[in-house]
Image (spheres, rainbow, N blue to C red):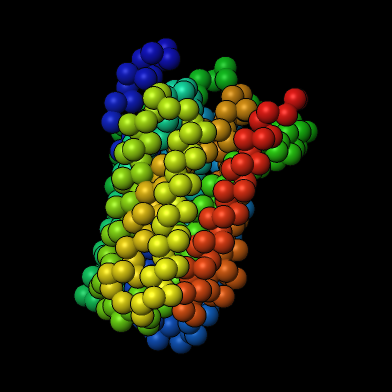
Length: 401
């Protein structure tokens, strides 16, 4: 199929790519309201249940190193279809888990397979478009992707209330089956055979080193990861933050995810509107200005007022607006230096971010969720480090070679 015909067949592809990208985050957020029930039914401690999330994120991170390289060799469509089928089987394994150790195993299997959508989806965007069109499509995907984390804990909370924790994973099985059918029917192959890359160890080793030793790539990935972690610590701490600090019921997780995802939608829409009108660095700078404002407001509210709705969650709307405004631009800047290895570069980028997410789940969030003030301080510190990384990225692009 000619390149023009491939692009013509991708009308509405943003929805499909957003759904693929959202499957991983959905499988994180949907079962958060079930943590207490899982602990009770499987005879596990809250820390042991928390490790089902840490194990998922760690296995997700490790496998994202390979999704892109494999798709560079065998094509985007085939790898996505296989990964979705395996994710559905892993979700079915979670349904029938009778011990916490079994749930750890099946969550690891989910993590291994769920990253294919987000990694290969980014590569597909760069297969099809460059410049402002790529930024617009990335922004559209982020807008629709933002709905999943908002909907997931609400769906999970009601499923938990009606049927118990296993029903959340039954829902994931059905959702994955529907997504597999949609991809089988609608997803085109965007990487022609003549552009596919080798899986030879020598070639892979050389290419991974080229990508992972590139200062502009590393700084852009660090900025993306730290910005996201400033918000993600609230997601990881959601059961404690909402149910203990704010007194929200298990069906009320929309109090957190509603404002946060509303900000993601707003920031992504702004990024798409600004594409081609102002430069990527200026868009990123505007995103940081908004994030700094949100972090300072969050600190001020936590110092001046006791934890309560709605002011304890409203700064998240402002923060995620700035984060989503900068995110498509930083993603494009990370992948641009590697036009012939976009899948592998997207793998490395996702590995970088998901590894940091795993660290946040295992260490950072538990250290910060003791109070709403410590979470606000964590947001501020992570965002500030992300800003330094973004500045370092700009300087590294100006260096020769």
